[in-house]
Amino acid sequence: MKFIAKLDAVCASNQSLLCIGLDPEYEKLPRFLVGKYGVNALFEFNKQIIDATADLVCAYKPNLAFYEALGPAGLEELQKTREYIPKEIITLADAKRGDLENTARQYAKALFEFYQFDSATVNPLMGYDSLAPYLRYSDKLIFLLCRTSNPGARDFQELNCEGKPLYQHLAESAREWNKDQNIGLVVGATAPRELGIIRKTIGNEMPILLPGIGAQSGDLEQSVKNGMGANKARLLVNVSRDVIFASSEKDFVQAARRRAEHWRARINQYRKNT
Ligand code: OMP
Image 1 (cartoon, rainbow, N blue to C red):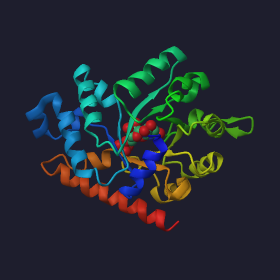
Image 2 (cartoon, rainbow, N blue to C red; image 1 turned 90 degrees about the vertical axis):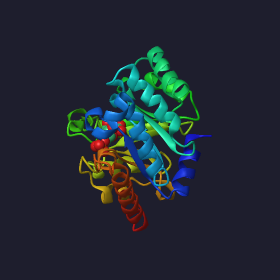
Image 3 (tube, rainbow, N blue to C red; image 1 turned 120 degrees about the vertical axis):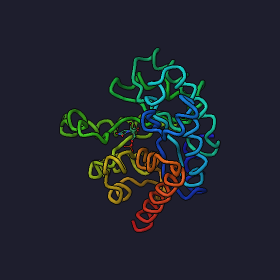
Image 4 (cartoon, protein in one colour; image 1 turned 90 degrees about the horizontal axis):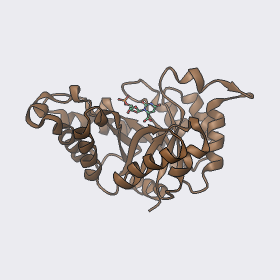
């Protein structure tokens, strides 16, 4: 199934644009879980979060850093996590890869064939040839970093190049390259004005991954308003720490569900009112 069809189906069935970031920083995991499972607490933690929230989300986004940091044992936790995510929910590998063609081919193979993710984040700085290996997978999708949520996004992404900011050039190229509907963009909720410009540039079809809600204090209302595309959707609102670390006690699962319910409801309220 094409990525876009799967995304639309799960957004409709769960009435949700919420993507939960599975960023299980080892040091922040509930102590009782680490005591019982050791490194395997990563999967155990994710499994319980997934069980508690799978009806509230459109996607799960594991950021590979939190798994790679633990070496081969961490990668096993990543694999188990990917395999545990229910098949109707979008899986997004936050890998921010970016390299030349023959290397990119191996990254794409690892993410799409070995781990079997539906999508991945990719850094487009090296240009079209560095993206081509991912685009050959016409059922998958890559989210290109466009205007990121961090303060340093201004260092390069907002530089004026031939009368337009760099992020706008990127959005225009992404639209041009999107022949198979397998490109999306990453735009931070900390930049709702830029998000509006980017959505106008790419049109309503292309999905946008929107991180920066919760711990990074992005503006949810403006972002939903400016970022939504077709069917008041095509926007994946990522929240990681604010959901998964809502509590580090025995009630962490219930606390995560409450936060996920809160975000889904707020997103839907802004969708409705726009
Ligand atoms: P929280 O700030 O805890 O919600 O986590 C945000 C997640 O989104 C992390 O995994 C980040 O690496 C990721 N992210 C950003 O925060 N900002 C960006 O501009 C892009 C990403 C991303 O590509 O997902």
